[in-house]
Length: 435
Image 1 (cartoon, rainbow, N blue to C red):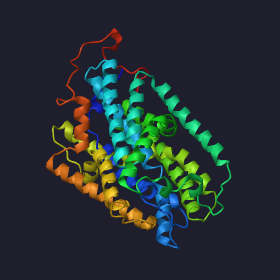
Image 2 (cartoon, rainbow, N blue to C red):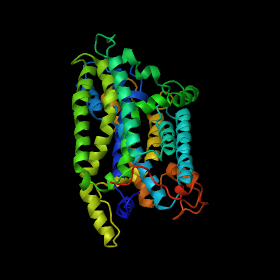
Image 3 (cartoon, rainbow, N blue to C red):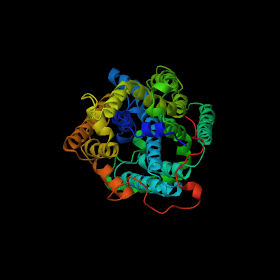
Image 4 (cartoon, rainbow, N blue to C red):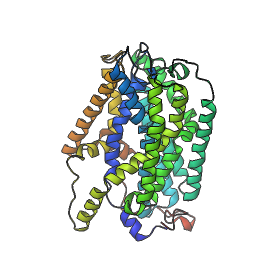
């Protein structure tokens, strides 16, 4: 079982996950804007990445920057934070004395509602929703909370190896587009986006995609299972609460992320703008190796914010109420309302860029689309800051919490009946007996 000192560490207020989620939403906005919200049929290249129109240098720069920092960066980071959040909740339930079966039911309820939110988001706002998958992934984790850490790590590693093998096989297929644009191989954003016609058409297509999301869940687990497991174990074993003791491991994750960004993301961007060939192959490699950037980006933020976190811990030990620095306050405000911020992006994109909305960036190129993504993210940042100043939670966070935990929230101690077997009186994790 966890020692009392690890329980104490796990109960401390962590700031870096909130800051990370706030920053992550910028990457999500950039990726979704260029790949899911705009039609790029008139682009000469990089149609899956916002498009390059004519000889625009700014479009080319935006495509390369997007391949480095946006595409298959935000989702793995979000997946890692999903695992961290799940681990923090389960440790909290352990401290409250929840039997494993009761904790499992509560977690399934919480993440089941998240999946339901994702289905609604898919149908009525954005076909590229990720909340449904994360909800289903949370349910799957809840069913495995009694698994040993080594087993979970092995399973996460195996599914990533499977995705790597599939990627290697797929990369052997010759690129059918001699010009170096992978759009013809994968289908351009304008072909697959359901948001460029009518709103009713989007709703009808969203229903079909919501069903497809459930069916394709196993494949998505193969792609994103490893960062979820790593985030879960990082929270469960206290790594994120004791950065100093795990600096070597965290720096190793950071180095892996940097290598992927430079060795895969940069060639992908250069291939998309025609500097080198093999665009389809680099895209597939980015899909597989890109998931390794999630833990590294989170680890980098944890290391960067560790001095702040230690200062907060010292303030709490003196009985003071610590305050986050003003420079980080807006990002933390948005991070605490990441679900509302994520769905808010879809509302704003629907208004600003779709054909049934204002259509502001249709056939504009990656540069202008990226600027629109930054604007949308900034507007959600302002909304989160307003909520924080008023002391109000995000609307979707408020609703989700009430649906999952009830009006009273979680009790300080488990109040339900103790369920057999006796060994389940407390939520004990096999394999967690030592740090």
